Amino acid sequence: MAGQIPDLNAEARTGTGKGAARQARRDGMVPGIVYGGEADPLPINIPFNVLFKKLKDGRFLSTLFNLKVDGQDDVRVICRNVQRDVVKDLPTHIDLLRLKRTSRINLFIHVEFINEDEAPGIKKGGVLTIVRPEVELNVVAGDIPEQIVVDLAGLEVGDIVHISDVTLPSGAKPTVDRDFVIANISAPSSLRSEEEAEGEEVAADAVETVAESEAEAEE
Image (tube, rainbow, N blue to C red; front, side, top):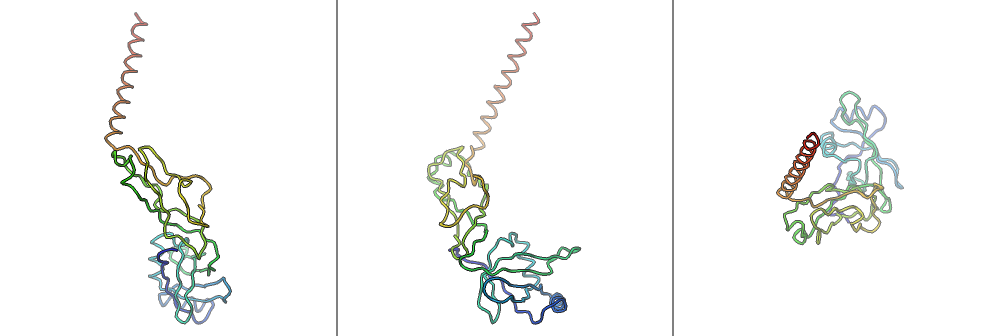
């Protein structure tokens, strides 16, 4: 299970329709609706500043939240739509979907790298380059993994870690249908410089050889 699902605090909205929504916005709130599951739709208000910050943090539409509303049981929700002002691009309405524990959703899961001290490539000065610190997985709402683990033990310089190399939690699967790269161990800068220098020397020798051949041909 995930270590902690972030809370999203809201208040029940009295009244529905455009008038109630406009009043909520005048009061510094963003009106919204919670729907789905076996309960009736619930009109809510979320403080504008709270919602705006969460939107700026990114990946709001793929984050599972624990919705807390006074007088209501906590419920897990995921955002399905954020309406915005066409001029100011600020949130004006939000739709939240209730999730059952058996519901499947797409979420970004943290990637944890272990056993760096047991990777020969890193011991030789190789650099761990992390391509994806998070991976989007399709998971069951009631069994969300806190992280996926990449074991670096035994990896050499030049080795690449693909998603197929990682043991995923039970029931989880990537949302991308290809064997994408998560990380690699690249050569240390000193070694790359030496290889580049050798390449330049080989190129220079090749040019010199061609020049000599052309000169001999002219004679």
